[in-house]
Image 1 (tube, rainbow, N blue to C red):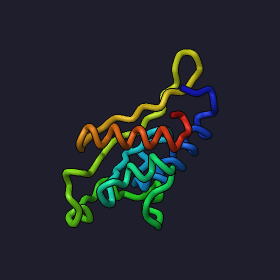
Image 2: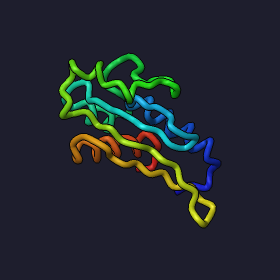
Image 3: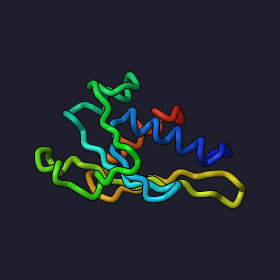
Image 4: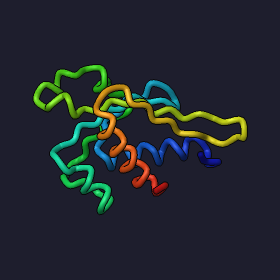
Length: 125
């Protein structure tokens, strides 16, 4: 939860997703569909330990991209490790903002590892 303005919260969320090499597509002002595929075994451990991805190059997409809808480029990577999730920012009754991450597809434990890395990027953990 945060009392920061929603635009500021979403800016920080997008920065954290970019650092974790997550693809996203905005489907509303405060709602996004996201997809993350580990580049290789141990990628999350490297990000959690030192706070930076273990490989070079940006893997994020512009918010207007339809990359989530088209899985044709996923044929070359193992689909069992693809994590699809949605991010939604809610306003609470106390005029705070609450960020919700909901797994849509993929292994539960890998999603939890990604959430831990995400919270670390946001400097919440």
